[in-house]
Image (cartoon, rainbow, N blue to C red):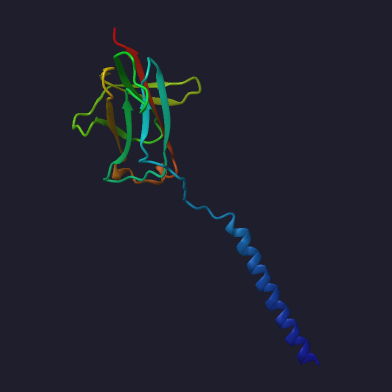
Length: 186
């Protein structure tokens, strides 16, 4: 009988050790640090702006899951003087301003209708009332007539240099606000 008791004690110890190991794994699993971030981004989805009158229009895009790379991130949008049914009744001039946070050391270029000339002309860094820094880039002025339907397609290229591959930039999201300021030509 003593042999049987020793055997039972041995199995009880094994079961207790096994249960403690499982509990320890669950406890440690929640405390282990992991470098990971994720998000869903509709990065290359076209955004369309319709200028039917003198107005200011803006759209915010979150640049998520960016990793340093030799490849450029490309975001497309278009600006038109019509929405498919209505057209502006006067000639308009417009500028594009792109305001972005300064969380990541990114460079931006803007191209129109598959052109090779970067349209950004004026770079400014400002600070808001909460102490957040923003970089604003403004394009040169463009015009639309009112007699025919017109559309300009734009390609925003964002570069995140590969040499900046560091834990310091992991999981950081950059926000970009595209603003179209239009006014009538008199």
